[in-house]
Amino acid sequence: MDTKTLIDYTLHLADNALIIGHRNSEWCGHGPILEQDIAITNIALDMIGQARNFYQYAAQLSGEGATEDSLAYLRDAIDFKNNLLTELPNGDWAQTVLRQFFFSTYQYFLYQQLQNGADKQLAAIAEKSLKEVTYHLRWSSEWVIRLGDGTEESKRRMLDAIDEIWSYTGELFIPVNFELLTIGDGISIDLSMIKISWDKKVKAVFEEAILPIPADTIWMQSGGKEGKHTEQLGFILAEMQFLQRAYPNSNW
Amino acid sequence: MSTEIKNEWPLWEIFIRSKQGLDHKHVGSLHATDAQMAIENARDVYTRRMEGVSIWVVESKFIHASNPSDAASLYDPANDKAYRHPTFYDLPDEVKNM
Image (tube, rainbow over all chains, first blue to last red):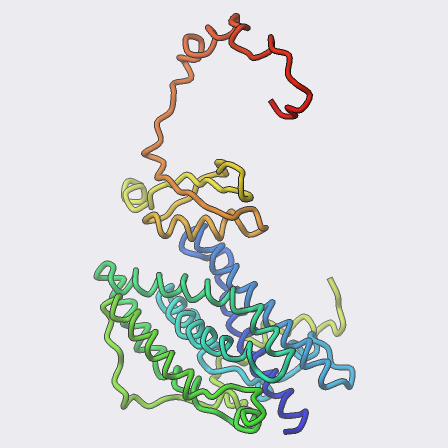
């Protein structure tokens, strides 16, 4: 395994955290109620904090003057390695909490393994982040159950959200090069094992929420980890990177 | 307007214990649909800066308060009964906090 592969894997972890963090931050000031506005913004901050840790490590590995900021603000969509799930639009509250639930479940089981991984720095970041993710999983599970087993309207919205998002969950478990090449050294994690835990957790929460699990035969989207994104990522980067692009090296 | 009030989530009073051994203190109130959500909302609203190690929530409607206009009859009579304060005892030096 070469350093480039480790950098790519680290960037993948960073990009996932940054992009879903940015999406959640779009709720700031627009939450359905003050308390939930604060809750979703807290989660956004947690994710951006995780992204910073991973970017700092990736910058240290790459040298060449890279910084956490240059990695976040000066790469283009094709260089981003986040899962498509993280860049999906917020939609309504049901769609946002369901996206968070799918992603937090994935992150929870991934970080549980990663904290014992062979790369000490990635392991340390995973261990530190796991406490936050445990809460995100609890919070988002509660909301899926509340809306799924709630009113007629909340159930309809949750069913619509499942239709909208489900086909983006498969990619979480399809390994790409930077995972296949690092798994032998114990750095990245066997995604097929994560999938077993993920399926079990999602099934348990959906059962409690009285929501149906979609059929296995549904075609799954993929490509995000290799830089093939939905059109959404371009819009996210346009907003997120505008300031650094227009006023290079500006500080605040 | 009336439908807005009808749809509003119930109000909860939040009590936080800042560290082991201290009492829970009232810190404020928030809206939530049930106790579980009230605890989670309290965690997000009131413990973001390491303020607490334990949270109590009580739905505001279950708190009964004394009437401020009764203050004179409730509290003033204690005013001239200095003998109720333990100020007439000589405390041994070993007793630091009394």
